[in-house]
Image 1: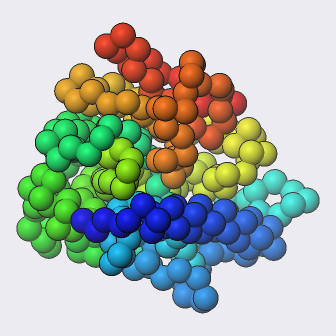
Image 2 (image 1 turned 120 degrees about the vertical axis):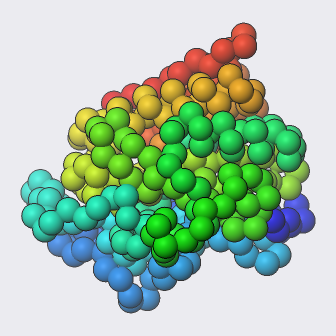
Length: 294
């Protein structure tokens, strides 16, 4: 995995934050005009959309390509400022298919675990535990081929180092199966993070209510996304609690692209209620869950 100097990491951190904010505004602008994000155009390509791209000279921190939106559909949604969102009535795609490009679009809805100082042994145990507790089917490196068309890889840190991301299929609380993945973010002069993620595009195929969700938009978050988010948040919290039993960590965050948004060191007590993010906070040998608040 690539490492950067402290200076380069600071620049990279600023870059992904700027990319995330730009992406959020771009989606709002496009959808407010009645448009739908499409493949192609001047935006980020499908290949670049994969989060935390392994960029020579950069740490495994968040890249601008992976934060914000790419020029792909994040779901069949049309929206206008003067009326309610209208969900498209096109056939719903299979959220468990690796080769449906839209399944990987829209950024990651994730359980992000701040593990602590750099430790290969702890990172691998957390990876194995998250995969097992979530009940992920298979472990694959190539998201451009279906699982039955490729050989599985070992769910190990060595595989993660080699491929950048590992992918599988998991069952959601509503019974639908969806693609999922994991990525490690190893900061220079900072902690290891392990992110277990559900791409927003696949979630939109598994539950059409997801398609009206614009991450980072407080009005949309308050308007009704909790109907689908809460069951997923609660399930991810259970996964996080299971991982904590096997591998202690410093903080867990649940939401859209949340890793690095806050750190355990930033919390002086219980976290304040937050619409966009839930917390898993270790307390006296157990994890206390603070759900995102409407």
